[in-house]
Length: 290
Ligand SMILES: Nc1nc2c(ncn2[C@@H]2O[C@H](COP(=O)(O)OP(=O)(O)O)[C@@H](O)[C@H]2O)c(=O)[nH]1
Ligand SMILES: [Mg+2]
Image 1: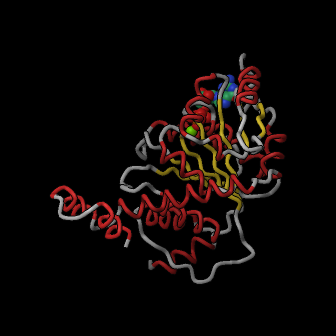
Image 2: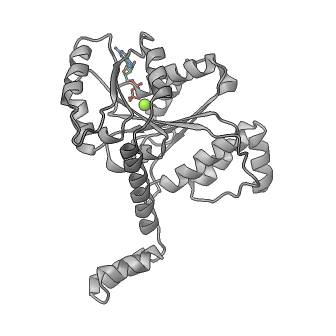
Image 3: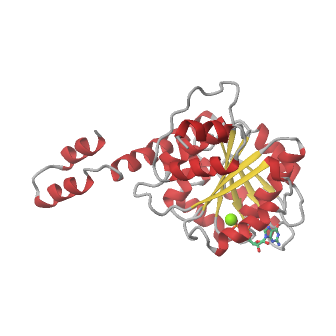
């Protein structure tokens, strides 16, 4: 089938064809949309945080929340550690699928391998495709353990940083610079001892300079299904301040810039020329960015 027929079929709800198109985009292909539907603008939510804090479990609850309001949800789960068939993905599927509403849910795992410059440009196309195909809510799950994985959430409209009762996790997020991007900080596993304390300690440590307002910190338990409605209420009604929007835009630019440089067909030649000293770094950049 050609691209246009695939696209038409995917837009009509054929999931196999949607998956095929996503695979093409993952491999770096570009898609031409005939005409996009201007009334359709998906809301894109990024969920990041250290491994094991309960992001996938929470996404399962978020799926149920939207489904019970008759809204559909597509999830792109980006996992740098697991190959396609890896155990982590299976585990994720089970937890996410416990939201039992087949028609209204689409879950897709992506691996970060094979993307020399990160996967930001494929991700943008994937979001565009899902939106074109009528997915109202798009959720991007990334593990907050490496710069590029974290920064990829900058492509979301709203960013949720998830943390657990262990204080060590949030320190990781602070180091990675994710705190300033987060619209809301969620402490999951409120059923475990230490969660309330962790939330308090994060609240008090969040003091941004220049009168920047800090994000809300909320306690939830994905396992016990507690605090989810309150969390979603905050997520849906939060207004990202201008300064945070600017940081997001800047991160998107950096991410795409990296991606463009590192995927340039001239990269090897330019590195060779730099190594032999025949060009300057400025020349190299000009060459690569062209
Ligand atoms: N006690 C407790 N455990 C949870 C909760 N949410 C998730 N978990 C458990 O934490 C582990 C990691 O969850 P997962 O959703 O895969 O985390 P992810 O790596 O951040 O996606 C699993 O064993 C979950 O069952 C919760 O609210 N309370
Ligand atoms: Mg997960």
